[in-house]
Length: 113
Length: 113
Image 1 (cartoon, rainbow over the protein chains, first blue to last red):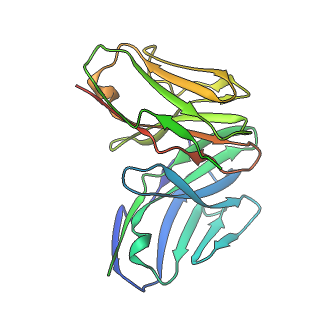
Image 2: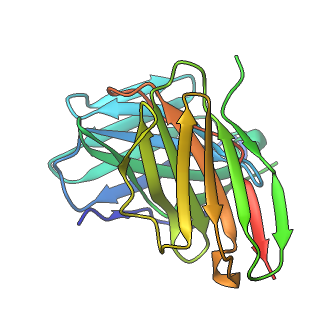
């Protein structure tokens, strides 16, 4: 059974710092991995999706990497801003024919001005 | 373009009452997903549809839960009778399949008293 873990559960950093959020999964046979952002009282916003054949994806100040063999992904946020404060979740998808996403519990990020 | 639309945004009702949650997916998306989010269990997939047909309902907790998708633009999740432990945020998401990301609605916050 696939399990997804995100550590730490919460992180607080001063504005302007570069930071890394971690995601690990127990079964390396994944189809893709997706990073989401969730603001309080809102749904999930898709940030980046990495296919199993890819090593990284970039969007603006965000960079996500994937190491399937070690069961790890990281989300790198450059030059953090208070507006980046949110909960970040990663989710893995097992196979092309399997649409189910398995989510981690998320990392609650606070960027202090 | 309009995203995934869920209604109501909030629902407070008494134990034993029937609850119906509604979802309109993004036009053109063939897949529709119902998730439940709680502090204890995080985000869990309840059921998903492909072309209006239920594909995997293994996450539906009990017979008290049922979901329908009568057409490509509408789905319901019904709980009858409701219990306090059903209190959670229920999300609907849709995707175009393949390796494409899932897009989430803002959720329905359900409180069963």
